[in-house]
Image: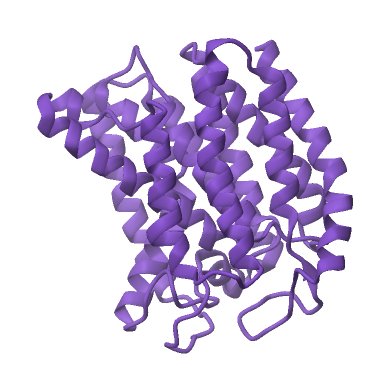
Length: 350
């Protein structure tokens, strides 16, 4: 617990302090997000905030970890550095956006597996090489999917950082309850960095994290999901818990994928104001109301994950079925909500 608290406070303080020079750097080099038809802000906003989040997490975990644990955390940080760097290059306009999805994210997943971190779903169910191969595929899909979902979640002030902070609370709690120090400390570091950044990013935002920050947070969320082990829980509960903790971003990605695919658009290549937060805002909740509602739903998902960890396989299956029904019911409901339609021309991820 002491290491987790240390990581949290170091990351919190570092994030709060580092945003100031990073914001000045972004303005100096011209890394600003200009207003546009698909944007909700009306003034140019610096967009290098992900660098402050990245530095805060790295500083915190290097101080908090020592001994054998540090070797695995180095592997995690290598993958995280890759996606953060590629995201910053994309923010700068130096890379095609598909490089992130089809090269950087899969490569980061491979780095995790080389570090000994991968899914253990099929290997526990069917065993043998078939189970191992299926888990390798699942690891890549999970890392790419969650990292990409956070990349497109960064479309409203305070949304991406707040959802990451909320998920980190429950990753840290479950890991602590099950004696997983690495997950506890890493989640605490992410919580501190994201919370500190929210001081500058909640509406009205003074800085954006950019794709570098969103992809960095998404990759760490995917990593925490793979590392979380509920040793005294059923196998179903163990892999259902991370899905519930990350339920908000999974829901938003599902909504955007279904909605854009039905309109003949590429889900991850066609930006627009058709996310869950946009639609909730248009239903009368407003910007802050929509963001706070998604925070609340994130807390419900995390609380349900804690509950599932104490349930039998049958109970976990029931919760999973209900969750699936809620997700698709929510998609059907928000599909009818008003949103601003976008053109079909592919562009940067959003």
